[in-house]
Image (cartoon, rainbow, N blue to C red):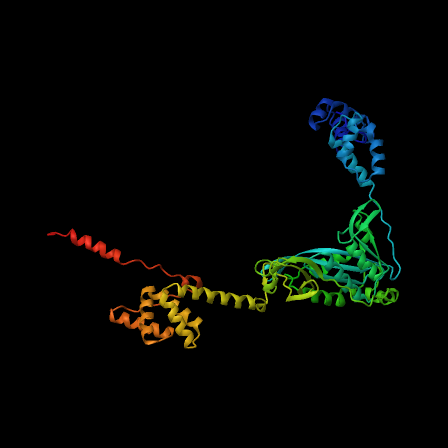
Length: 509
């Protein structure tokens, strides 16, 4: 049997000692000793003749199929450290490699383990740089909706003074708003800001060629700082904010009950001022708040003019005079239904404009599927609907019989509320039927008794004379439209014909 170089054939010290005892004291044969100890006779013979524990003899190892290609792999990884093992495997196969992928993978894994990068710690000057990033913090329950919770974190590189704020979105408007809140918290801005390759900051990059987001650059130009994008996959370049995020997870979020929105931001501010920025920082061996006293003198002044961080979106009102924003709907006056409008959303309110004229303002909802409305927006529509309903009701009333027109004229001459009386009369039509109501109208016209109460009284008296019990009107609050239904009256002479046929067929006829 052969072993790889460095692995020796032989026995351990215990076997060596027992072999010599059995031979030199017990006087057993080499074969017998081998059978007892399970050793080869040559191994037993070497042990007996050796004054010390025999060295294990190395056996030459067959060279690896990968050996001719190792220098090529090393050169490629030196030039491109992130090159995939599968890519290198394909390349050396084209050069004649006939071994397995596993050998290549194990060799490359060993190289990368030995070539771990060593980082140089760099300290910045006061007011020179800040580092910014987002942290994903699970979800938060807002009403009946569950929203993703993010945490904006900014750390001043020199003092390690930290600002953090929770949001339910990472849109560029919220990103800029959090910047402004952070810079107000610090009382100034640094010369540079360091970012990961966030889409809100970097639109695209090719090597060192970086294309920044124009909307973010407008903000940076107003506050006069230089945005700097980290190299891809180089999280160590913004290690200070990464450490800050880790500290927030372990020192603030860990072990807390479910976050409450927006109260979690008040808790965060209290934690920053009472814990995070007054602790003894493990790296600089000082409190961030103490080092900040020196750094704040080097911060650049903030601009005097207010920067608008409202979310601005073009919207179109639907058929119900509502616009959609952030999974909710907001009402506008009915005159703006179907129109193109502009929506501006701040932290607490949503405003809607036509050109530059504000047409609606609402408190902003962070739930989902909530209809936010102002009842005044529908006043004109409700009034118009009422007028339309009254006109339609009058049309139905006049279609009953020509006598209905004469009764309407009487209502108007008596200066009564014709709309209300017609509505009550049509209720009687649905309850008692068209025939009974027309009979009552004919009777009332003879005596010039105008008004729905007179007609209902006539109907009830006629029903009492015929021995009929008054019908109870059915109201269905959940389906008010159903109470407006009326049953088409049938010609009762049909039953007279049926009864006549029965009489003709009777016995004796």
